[in-house]
Amino acid sequence: MSSSSKLLQLPAVVCFGKKQRFLGTAGAASSTMNSKYTISQIKRFIGRKFSDAELQKDIKSLPFLVTEGPDGYPLIHAQYLGENRTFTPTQLLGMVLSDLKIIAEKNLNAAVVDCCIEIPVYFTDLQRRAVIDAATIAGQLKILAHSYDQCLGGRDFDEVLFQHFAAKFKDGYKIDVHLNARACLRLRVACEKLKKVLSENAEESLNIECLMDEKDVIGFMKRDDFEQISSPILERVRKPLEKALACAQLTTQDIHSVEVVGLGSRVPMITKILTKFFGKEPRRTINASQCVSEGSALQCAILSPAFKVKDFQVIESFPFSIVLSWKMAAPDDTQTGAADMRQSTVVPPPPIDPFQSTNGKRAKLKLKVRLNVHGIASIECATDFTLEILFGIPGGKTICIIRLLEVIIRKEQRMAAGTRNKEAEPASRSEPISA
Image (tube, rainbow, N blue to C red; front, side):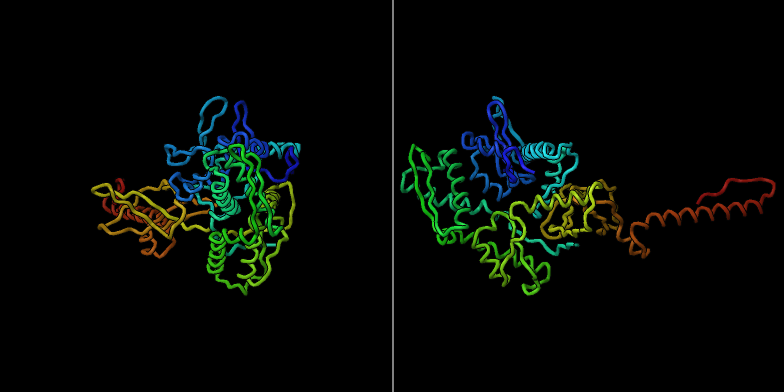
């Protein structure tokens, strides 16, 4: 499907104007004239605390104002319809998804009720929940391991070029683009285009008319120089590869083929690193830009009862372990109990009745945790691990069997009491003796 501009790719951009808002392609087109109230990079904000170190690093390079909200999450400031307003990342993502829904309904000429949204594998439980909140609009493949650097992508290469030319123009033209939001945005757009050209050509020039203070600027970059100034970023590519193989307990000799996707993969040096690491040339049989949407379309077809597709199953692996935390009753009311298995997603405390430990000893609990199709964990039940060991039966049945034994004992006691009463007083009937 394509938008009204006939583009297959739509930027996740929301631009707030004086009388209306512009979404997607229209928002990106309006960004140069209204950079202060053009919101992009929404994916980096969703479900993350304002105090997140990586988020703070991203905020420094953005032209719009971001502050901390009452709940500790970021709030994006914008002027809309003549008023100063704040929006959460979830609200902004919901606007983008609403625009996509309208485009889909126009192409399909039918109402869109269900959808499938692809998200980065590194999204935590909170981020996944935030995406689901934003989406309230309403072979066999087995994944052995995940590894990633969530702060490494095509935007980082753009930032390297931006900082390089910003420093160069400050020395050569005596202008500081950091002092002008519109100049920053225009230079970033030019750097992104330069990066794409350098993926195909060995060298390219950068020309911007009236960048700042009515000065035209000219820059030049060779691919070798680009790779040299990007070396700190390129060095980070190898670590996720090594970690993924280690988690899957594989070696490079076990890998049959390597497929690269994503716009950042078009950087030639990325291909060189992958070739050197795996000892084979990466393949590009999948469209680097459309692979995510194609996967979503396949998943929709699998889930929909209206389509019949070839049997296809994805066995996913969740890249996070689970951390449970709770408050414990203590004399000073300050102690906190925790079950920690490495750094991972935090699951909200479940509504489980309190367990009482005996003799002041630590109690062991057995929890049943379920991971749904959205990658969100929830606790179904909890049992006392001590009782499970005592009876040698599954913990989930311990309480039921104990209650069954109580019923049997009480029934036998009543029968025995009734027999004794009949023998003592044959003509009268007495109430059963309760144990």
